[in-house]
Length: 139
Length: 139
Length: 139
Image 1 (cartoon, rainbow over the protein chains, first blue to last red):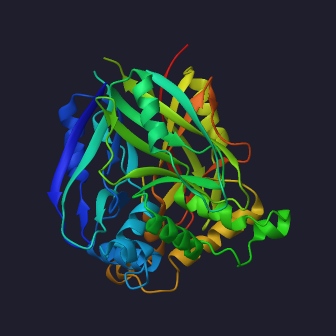
Image 2: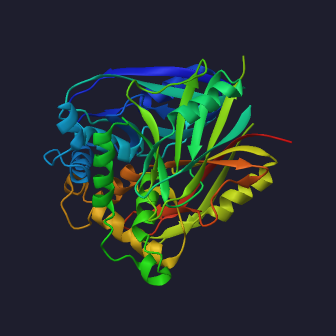
């Protein structure tokens, strides 16, 4: 059985959004017992990953993204389109838009300190609507 | 239901190949209505991700990969095997070989500007055959 | 049909563990013929990817991770928690905890030189138990 749910939220520039509860809720409400949750970003300036969601690491991941694709270097994208978000695109493409997480007995199989996060990489606040797809079997 | 399709194409060194239409066609021809497409690279010197496929970003992603694993530093792989493509392997392993994209009503759930791309990282042109696996349900 | 298997192993600091045989065995023992294997790390200081598993590249990937998130820079995580493994978390979040690999006729669709590896990024040896989830159909 395959189900789709959307998670919608507002972001800030550089925001790291904990979506673990939203994904967990999608699993519990689905009626599915075992399966996989595919979390997918339908966009090219944001990404999903897992992290221990605490303020220190939120700060550290922002610095890591800045090392990966610095804001203040030249991007051909910006010269062509003037969006100023070349760095956003590159960060998002390097991290990737999808994540697959198994669930068992209606619970995501995350580690104790592991949260699912959306990383806002665009150069302006956005309203995001990401996809949670559940592929699984019922009781 | 689970189906496999292959996409085959020629690459150039550093080539970024838009495979979106190939994956979309695989979905449409499958007869499946809802499901997930797993795009998988059976190889270790190429990767898949999504990007806004325009010439500026194609140039920018190449520069980003060069920062991530520069061509002209020493690689133990090259010292052992003399292939000269240590950088190719490292780039591919850091980006990863797989991507999962949901589809709904026979359409990939991509964002407006989001294309699926294969990144050729090897140090010579290749004939690539990547896997599109569809896990889904029919009408 | 959906099945779960765990792979359990000891790691060393910076260890790169070839789990290909464990995943292949999970597929063969499952009775499933076609499907996808989702390899998932329930933790935030390790990751999975594919690589040509030879000593040169094992050395090269360690150096690449050190460039990505150096051990000896400051991490806010370490200042708050004193774990000393801020770099571990950042590396793991950038690479990601999941990988999806199709299998066909009971065989993983890997390239000739492609192995599945777990990357230990924590600052101490660990006992790891990673998840292999198989979504597939039988004979």
